[in-house]
Amino acid sequence: MTRAFIFPGQGAQTIGMGRALADAYPASKAVFAEVDDALGESLSSLIWEGEIEALTLTRNAQPALMATSLAAMAALKAEGVDVTAASFVAGHSLGEYSALCAAGTFSLADTARLLRLRGEAMQAAVPAGEGAMAAVLGLDLAAVEEVAAEAAQGEVCEAANDNDPAQVVISGAKAAVERACEIAKAKGAKRALLLPVSAPFHCALMQPAADAMAQALGEVDMQAPVVPLVGNVLARAESAPAVIRENLVVQVTGRVRWRESVAWMAAEGVTEVYEIGAGKALSGMVKRIDRAVTPHAVGTPDDVSKAVATLAQ
Image 1 (cartoon, rainbow, N blue to C red):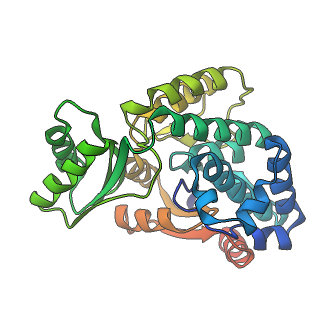
Image 2: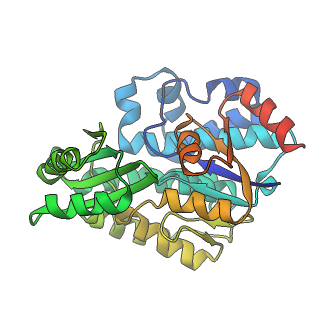
């Protein structure tokens, strides 16, 4: 049986995530403490006791979701399961950093600092209110690409996240994305709705953030992952640090090829995926991409126990 560990992206954050893991596992609690130390502030207090509006800020959400994922990995390891139980790791957008940290490419402290910088740079790339993202449901990637091209009218409007066969996210200038929603509905989309995000991620407007990440990634120590990463940019396995570094920069402005990534893993024999961290959004996408792949969520101590039992089979 071939397995993959997958790591969620922005939007999965909730107040209280990971707290039960920290209470149950000293190793999980230590993950949050190390992230707090790396950032020089108590991010864990915000995660567990703060306001959701503050946690949802990109600069906070990105390292917070990573910390929760790595706390879940620490709990698994405490129960005798490490990342090598998987044949591949993958993550959705920021989740790619969580996957790489789990696989030993980055240290936990470096990952926290990289994601804090990434969140701040992505937020700063476009003035508030000038960009937008929208989820289009019921049209495939090719149809949404046509919608985005028609809506652009000289502005940036791109298919940013190819999540599953019936969900593609558009990103770009606010007016263009709003036009795209109306065009998508006219072309038969079941729904086309603006998303509550603070910036237009994964489109050309993010180039200043890509430049910032190129500099930061050039200065950080990277090791080859002990388990190959199925990356957002190439949608296939990669292990060379130089290639991973380059693709993490491209990823800021590039499309998240999640549907293709899951399909590639399924074609390589993956029959089970374990969503490590907050929420179950990726599990839902996996079901819609390939029903032969069984997803498991690992975000609570109970989830850890169930996953350990399944992984032992």
